Picture (tube, rainbow, N blue to C red):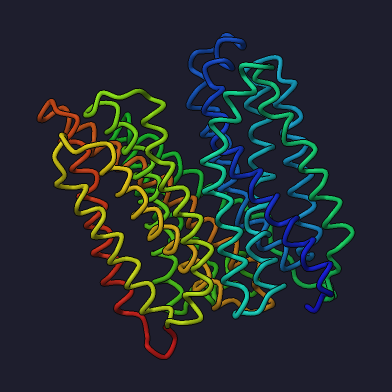
Length: 451
């Protein structure tokens, strides 16, 4: 699609704001959970505030991706934005815990329509030579969100109330809706085509729901959680087998059957999961081993966020200089070196050394996240670009959910076995190191003709 320069610039602004508000929403609520639970009188609300949003967004992502291929990206993007707007508004006015959770589900469904559409629009509006730069810029929104969300949340809570954690999104959503309406004209005409059946959508939702429930339960009830996870993976496999036989699949079967695409989605799954593990346990290390404040623990991630932004932005330029396969191998090797150092670092290590490692890992993980997404999306066609983008986004969400749970179990069991926090952190980062060794092996298997 060829747009004039002005329209293209405004669409970049719209995509970036949309990504930024969904990224901020995923983290800013952390600062308000205590105020929310106290105000609504439900101390058990904390986990549900996150899980309802996570589950609904994950379930909606592949469905919106498929619907965009049928009905157009503009319609689905706007639908996602409107649902996010509705859910956000209802969250702000929530008078009870159940009302809030229902609103979070609506908000999550909206986010499930926004996230894959931002990837799909970048893939459609920009060729490969500029796509990497724009995708890197867009991915930097996650790094910026991790920087400003806690500070913004703290300011809002000190000056206003927790309701404004949600209300603050409303004007930005309206800006994005306006920009998309004014500056995005979809050239493709969507002719009537065979539609997916309700049974297909229901099968996918049930399979993902069982899988996500298993992942969530593994932290507290490992046997029940593991059983549900295995059942969920089995149902997903059966769903996939059935999709290969249908004439109108929900998931992009033809693209998934490309071996290099499967390898790259494994990278997306595990790199994003490793990122969450790093962000969770480095601040805890600072607090328990160096005996510093929670504020300094959070600030330990500041260099990581800054260099994540730089890595994401420059990944587009790096992709123009290096082959995707070679670049991924270099990035994975760099991240592996950082996590191996953390795996054996003594607990007496100074704060400045941890800040240096935070910078180092932030750059390599930021580059790895962006390169893996761009490389995977390159296998999409114009006909299934939205479905592929939705599938990649789903892999990203599932990877974060799965690894943060697994690493939590490893940390807890290591601590109980040795009664030392540092043992848990070492085992967590050693596990992540093993994951990156596995990823290096995965990438080495990529076809030279495709990689």
